[in-house]
Length: 133
View 1 (tube, one colour):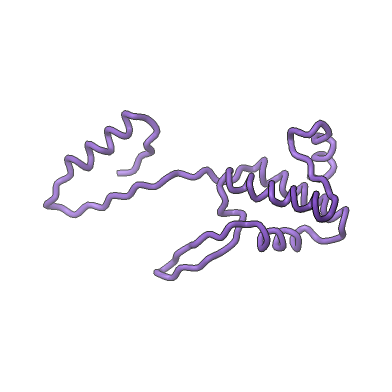
View 2: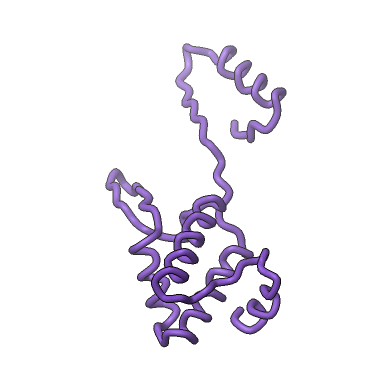
């Protein structure tokens, strides 16, 4: 049985299930934290930034994506068939991790290349976004 634990009632239900399981039968219990993957707005903004960086530097979007991943993306360990590998992939980032990744890029580009990447809170964001999305 799988269900999310979102309320105290859900938590009590999970505890009762474990308490009442028949120990004469085998059971498997797993508790996982749910991570919300990066959202489409973050992804769209990220690629708008890459388009803008291309316009400013001539470095293609896919190249800069790979470069930024190597420099700023946190490593994630994935396992398949008993073999673990470590990868750097923005597809594996949750919303918070993607925000932190993008903030590192924004600061780096401003400090090292004097390229200012706009975010939603910037007054001219809508103009920037329409041009580079």
